[in-house]
Amino acid sequence: MSGTTEGVEIDLSAINGALEGDGGIAHGALLVAFSEAVMAGDEAAMAEKRRAVIESLGPAAFVDTCAVIGSFNVVDRIADAIGIPLDEVLEGMSQDVRDELDLARFTAAG
Amino acid sequence: MAAAIPDYSHAPVPIRDDLKKTQAALLEYLAAPGSWFDSAERLAMAAESRQAPHCSLCQERKAALSPLAVHGEHDRARDLPDALVDVIHRVRTDPGRLSKAWFEGVKRQGLDDGPYVEAVGVVTLLAGIDFFCLALGIPPHPLPGPRTGEPSRYRLEGLSDGGAWLPMLAPEDARGPEADLYGSDPFVPNIARALSSVPGHVRALRELSNAHYLPFAGLTDPGARRNLDRLQIELVAARVSALNECFY
View (cartoon, rainbow over the protein chains, first blue to last red):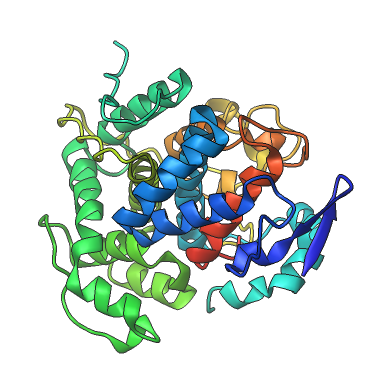
């Protein structure tokens, strides 16, 4: 399951938690592992991955990662609580990816 | 008077100034009187949202195949109306399984669109700051104290059906006091419009997105980046959204 952007082939399976290696994204595996640890509230895993992200990507990129995790915990909740549809522009840009990843399984029940 | 900057002294790395200022301003905004709730009520909702992950009913529902199969009372921290507590707890702990049927049930219990949107905004904005702190490895920021003042009762005119569960303000209808709501961005995603019946929430979300993710205008620019490149940013965003079971 892959996609190509800006001439770079990336492994989309990371989004569904099935990534092997970095998937064509610098430090992809580590970023996913850290995100998963935070979302699981796993203190030990967070501590371990936090140190690894800081060491591998640097302090500023670590802060950016924390900020994106925070931001999407806002966006996801708003989208689900208001029942907004996916924008046509964004849907058009991502339809093949959405099909590959079966993201329709997250559509809220009517 | 500028909002008090929260304590980041326990953070393992320096935090950039725009994040500090944005989070300080957001906390101050959450503590201020809103459209439908006063300061004390908004702070009560914020505190209740922090209680939600510890609620046994929410934990049981989260583990169940369907949240509808589990009944009971929420373990609540504040004396808020039942419908409001359910909104707060469900949005905080299990947003991916909210449904239009559930939303309509909440409305039948007497929670109108405006107060619903205000509650959703309070819960979600605070969740973002809290998850940032969790990822960083520092305690959640203390909530500010209550402020004086009454809710504005400002009912926005010109809302229309945008395909969501409740009406939103279309970009072409943002005028007068709401002329600034969407900036001059050529593309206004639905996420930016979602909370538009409480205009303050739209402005707060835009500030949060600018500092924590990307400006809304940059969403369609594949070259937009921070210290993470765009692919890294979107990988983290997508994995978080998948774990939240969010289609958007």
